[in-house]
Length: 269
Length: 287
Image 1 (cartoon, chains in turn cyan, red):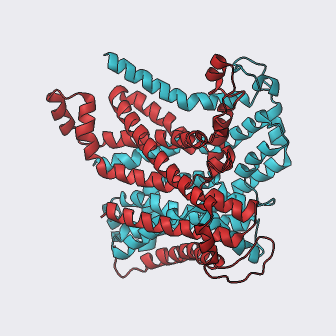
Image 2 (image 1 turned 90 degrees about the vertical axis):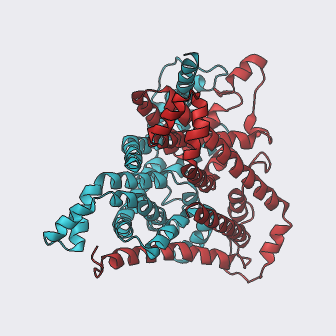
Image 3 (image 1 turned 90 degrees about the horizontal axis):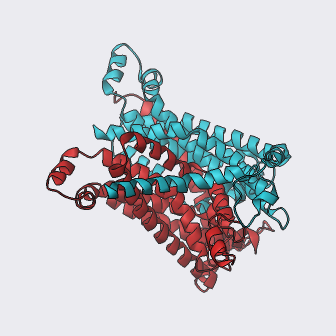
């Protein structure tokens, strides 16, 4: 009984370890520096919207938000168009060649980001495409395509073969079976896979740091630069930027959690 | 599937070709640049053979960064796995299914946060004068506590943030794995009056050996992406105490010297080491 109580308290403590720092950051985004930079943490204060309005009114933040959205959504789009069909082909034709392809796709994740970033920088400079959204989309599509393939193979494998057979008997060709049967049936897991690839590129930092300087800067880069303005770090503004940057991935929390549940529930059977 | 269908070819060839181009071009390019003395400021360069690699061997900062990277890998992978197994078992034993779902949702948050955000959240929490984590120490001793400026603790603090992001996530996966196990062996052990920790230590964890090894491998691969955390929290400092290989390559190529050729040779060494190591391990594990 006592151990059970201790275990439960430990769990509550762990949940607090996750939530308290985040709520603290959220609170700090609404504090003026006088409330923020105190030796004793302040839990009661007059909330201010200065930090948030400052962040949102900055041209650089707005530009970076726009860049991030365009670049990440386009890269995820490329992952969808090129990755999903490939995943379907691998899932439906298990043989040595597709196994090797699957491993090749996975091994792309072994590439250290520096080893990709430095040569890509030289390549984009030589092509005159350095610091453009196009170069970022193409670079990121390497991430999104491979992750989309890797995560949607199980989704396609779970589509019952009988349904596809039935559609074929009804006169559907292989492409129609993919588009009209497999895709809609596997839709929920595929959405989870795409959401994962979006979070990965939205959070990506090193490639963006090395491949952009002004025009194509993404939001993580601009947020990290806010700590470099002058000698005093503007912590309130920084916290507001952190909150803004964290919103999109957290909006996908529910979708990703049910994706995890589904992929493990299936192994059960 | 109809064997004469063209579908596998039309679906696979363009994607695989594009991925191969996108992955091989930079790799070959990096290899090529690593044999030159190319700098950031001039586009002309000469081939200098293996000079960059020979210089690396006698470069103490390079040796240091390789050591820091190795420490980082071992530290983050082992702590993440220990914490994830412990917390996963705890959730499985002590939380009702309803609470378990709530905890799983909460524990998924840290890994979804952009690493830049996680780094800033904790950098401020560890602030020597105003941080909430250092507050108890300040209140008791009246002294500031600057863990990020101390060479012995800086890497641990950054590692803590990494484990905070991944440990909770892996705990969620482990609890799902425990739920997917067949209940009979656990019931049998319970009838034999085994204590909960005995059940997990002797029955469930051994049953999950294969997925746990895969998880550790995934963590080892993801731990290679430590750059954003270190860049935001310490920039490799104090001194070179938290300078990993990618941080060193970055500062050689972009901040201090602009020696792209030299930085590329570091990148090539990292590339070869990780690809060879992980390919061997992965193939052996998934036989």
